[in-house]
Each structure stands twice: as structure tokens, then as C-alpha cells.
Length: 504
Image (cartoon, rainbow, N blue to C red; front, side, top):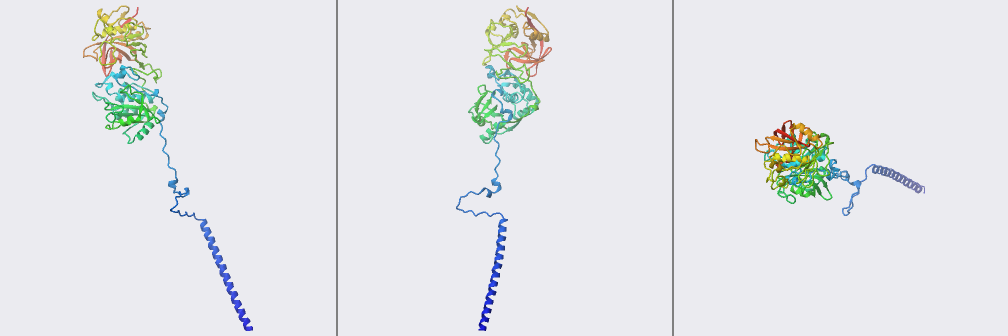
């Protein structure tokens, strides 16, 4: 029994030892397992979460946090194009739109002027002046000063490479840019944009452009035009139209037209198709021209920019006389009238014109003569007398022997300066000054001419009323020093005689 008990004890002891080892093994596994779990937890806690695999069959948009940074960044939006500050506040009445031709001047269209007949570099201004009209438009609209197209002709010659010669008078692109630079208007020369949308944007952000058009490229709006500069203003995105300054056609001028007409007609055969203004600095204007010093038809809304300016002139039309805005502020009547009203000069034209709308020849002023071809003296005396209220026609003066003495007034022969002083300060009792000049550039060498002074433009510049209406028009300006007269394009004459009439 003892052996059996002994064996049972040993068996029991072995079982307990096995259990103890098992418990220890389980405890060790628990400790190791716990350590592994803790390590895994800490590891997962300190690492970035893994992306969940995306099922191919699901069309689930990627979450914002999963989109790469270069995709999630919002691209910069292009600024909405707008008109520049220097044109944003302009109204249509602020825009200058000069006309260049005799058709416009003959009908006394607003913005037309006597410069159309000025004979420059072997040709009339009307033939080549579109670019110069556009330059004057920009200068008058964008700066604190203004000028006539004729002023711009002489200025461009001075400050750019512009060298007009007979048959070639038009100003070129580079000369346009050079001239604008000197008056503080920055610009770029550009070719036709590849798309119409690009052109629309560029016209808008420029504010104004000078475009070269040709009916050879498109004749929708312009016909029979080989090449012509036009000026575009105030582009309207809603209507896709611009205000057109077209110096060559009074019916086109100041009309709103589709911008597309211009784009289609751009002259692609030229080196450039348009000039875009890119900036304006009024303080950089080195010219600072002080006004329009020639005869022109100003619109009712025009206001001279230079304080105290007296040289902007509304030339009278056939139906309505206008007072010249220079001392002594006379009126010039170009319609026929039997009366002679004090303070008004009855204009007497000696030559008959054909094929021109502007024609102020009246046979009644020349009866019994058929015309006044060689009678500049009689025409000038008749005009001078009419200012002081004496209605003597040129035909009567000739018929009675072309006498210097005329009834109703005293004839005097002052010096030129004395005569001007009488005219300006005599209260209407002295006639305009009548000048006998020789030789006269408008006639063959050695010939002479008679003209009348109708006003004083500046210290040494005077407005001439010419009985001959030719290429320079019936009125023009001359610089006079003592007995010498300088006018047109470098012409010089001597003053031989000065006549004037005085009321008793």
C-alpha cells in the first residue's frame, strides 16, 4: 500500500509540476502577447492612417484630404478686363473726332476745318491727313491741351522721322508712336490678333486704338479704301460696338459701329494693323500746345482747354453767321445779302468754283462783270467797307474806275501796326486793314494780290480773308512783321500798301 501511495504521490507531484510549468508558460505567453499588443497599439497610434483600398467598381470621388496638394490648390483667376482709368470716365462729348476732307468742310460738318485745303509737301492735306487727324484726336482727348490736325502736321515733322514729300504725305506707324511718346501717350504697335476675342479684349483694356483698315480685306463698311487710319473709342462689351472717329467720311464719323467691322477690315498687308494706347502721363507732355489756331467748325459742346483761349473759331456757314472769337470779334457773312451791317464783313469771292460744295461766288456782287477773276482789289475794298456799314459792291467799284477814294468814308494809309490798332480799338469806326502784297504765292511769279485782315490771332499772327477761294481756302493765317508776311508752307511776301477806311 505504501508503494501505491508513494507512486500516487509521485504522480500527483509530477502533475502539479506540469501544471506549474503550464501556468508559467501561459503567464509568459500572456506577458509576451500583452507586450506585442501594446507595441502594436503604440505603433499604429504614431503612424499615418493607411488609405483604404478603393474598389474599382465604386465611382466614389476622392476625399479632399486624399487629393494631392497641386490639385487641391485653387488656380488663380484671370482679372476681368476693364477700360483703363484714362478713358473710363470719358463721355462721347469728350472725344475729339477731326475730319480731313473738303466734303466735310463744304457742308460745315462739326470737326471739319480749313486745313483740308492746305497745300503741304506737294499735295492737299485732305489727301493724306487721316493719321494726323487721329493724332490730334488722341492729344485733345487724353491730355489737358488740344491742337488742330494742321498743328499736328508741323509738330510731327519736328519730333519724329516724319518727312512728307510730294506724293507721299501719310505718316507711318513708327512716326505715330514717336510723336505720341513726346506728349506723354505711351502705346504699342500690334499685328492683327489671331482671334476676334483677343482683339475685343485688347481694344477694351487699351481704351482707344488707331487702326489701319482696307476694303481689300473686307468691304462690309468701307468701300474703295486702299488704306486708312481710323480711331476707336468707348468699346461697349454688351453691344460689341465702338465709337468710330473716321476723318475721311463725315457720315461715318462719331457713329457707333460693330467692332467686328474693324477687325475684319484690318489691313494685313501692312507692317502693323493697329496702335494700342497703353498709358497716359499728362505731366510728360513736352508740347503743351495751347489750342486750335485755325478756321474750323467746332461742335456746340466743344470747350477750349486752355484758360482764356481766344483762338477757337466757329467759321460761319451759309445759313448762319458766327462771330470770330479773336479781336475785334467780327462776323463774316458768306451768304449773299444786299445789306451791309456794321461789325459784319460781307465776304466777296472773286473766282467761280465748279464741282465743289463750298462756293461763295455771287454774281450780284460783280454786276455788270461776269466774274471777278482779276479783281481782288475791288473785292477787298468792298469787304472792308461793308464792316463799317457801307454797301458798295465790287462790280460798282470796278465800274466807277477802281478808285481808292469811296463815298461815305475817309480813305487813310496808316502803317500796318497803326491800321491794326485802329481796327482793334476804334469801336467799329475803322474798317479792316486792306493789304497789297507782292509777289503772291498763290499766283504766277511777279503777280500781286489784295487781301483783308479780319482778326488778330496772337502777337504776330493775323487771320486773312482772301477773295480767292483756292487750295488754301478763303481764309488762312499769316505771321506779319512790319512789311513782311509769312504764310502757308514757307511762303514770304512783301507788303507794298496798306489801306483803311474811317467813318467821318
